[in-house]
Image 1 (cartoon, rainbow, N blue to C red):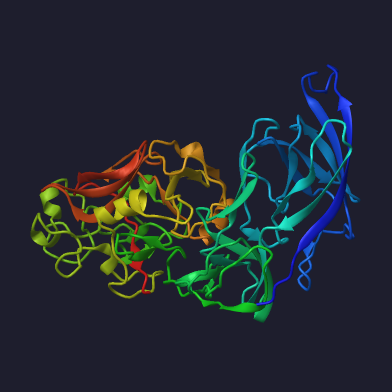
Image 2 (cartoon, rainbow, N blue to C red; image 1 turned 135 degrees about the horizontal axis):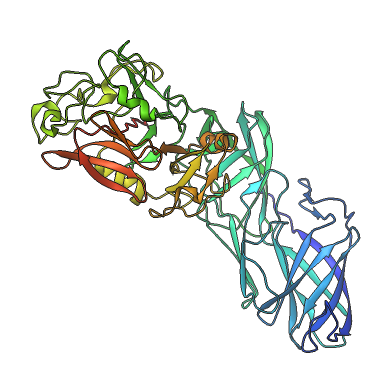
Length: 528
């Protein structure tokens, strides 16, 4: 591994003092505002780019350097095309000034001069430029009236090359990396850590052994990642993250690490996102939409769009109806598995007629699985028997309330294309894909997130699942269409009821009578 010392800049600071008066737009007389001009030497000042041959860094107009003094943030300097300049407020006497370059990544927190003691930046997205992180103290203590300061800004990360082989022009995501820096103005430190995502995203470009450079924060050596620990942003191709040695400050790893991304083969009719369903780590894909049935042709299919539901037309349910229905009594798969009511068009109000395999104690996935709708051939779901299934109540609960995700987000209530419902986010959801509000909040309102059909394409391509509030049916009467959704589980509850996932004013696992017509969203297991 080749290393070089990366000295970003040697600079002189010309400081001029001005005692401020109580004029409009000026601080009070108790505030001391200092104007600093920072001249960066040996730099063409052209652009924010890391020279991958030498590791040096150039700047461009608009770059910011944040300044700390006395354990507080005191202001920032902006590059004007020639040098850095700006105002800082109330620097502390007889202490060095602290300078932080955060790679043009906006801090996650709002900074207030004289108040902020800590901030953080996430350097996940490296598709536009390499976000070099650096800092230094001034060589001289700040003294009122002193007009000149000098310092060296030293790199706190490493420049690393990846040799990527992929047919995709989508950006490349590498998981398991430290991608967050916390700036502590009280301790004058910059600490790298693992954000909730732990992902860095490299620039797009396809081919064999295409060089892609990245900025990595100091971290311990990493073993080779698991399957799908490297993937394209569009999630069409995936591979494994290579073994990576210890990363040190000022590192320069030019030999490169090989990353090969191939096809991700998701099931026909599935959303390309994986969801963990139990503590054993088993994962599933969700179907592309709610299950639908047409009695006239005896055909099963998945809805074309995730927000699609039949609604009031479910009251036309009958064995000869030539339209589509999507609300079914429990276990009405169409197979005679032993229940008195097993046909999809069943409207009997006696709950005991919906016993799976003819006995109250059985679940849909007991015996031969034929009580589960997923046993059917589904026309746009590969059209093969026994390829899909219904989640159990424990699995629904794990998906909604228990599983650990990279982003920390499991679900969010939303209105998608004008339809109320709940978004489920996959295990590897990147919160930078789309900013969601009131996440993991069962009592949030549907309008917490309003998402257009065009924006939904972005979420769905990243693996998001949407469960529309399709209402429920009792006999041939419809209730709460658009404001409540009931999704069957494969699990019985009492003699007369079974578990559902309810999407209404709350979002939780509940139960309902077995004869009530509810929605079905099937899943298919992921084979590691």
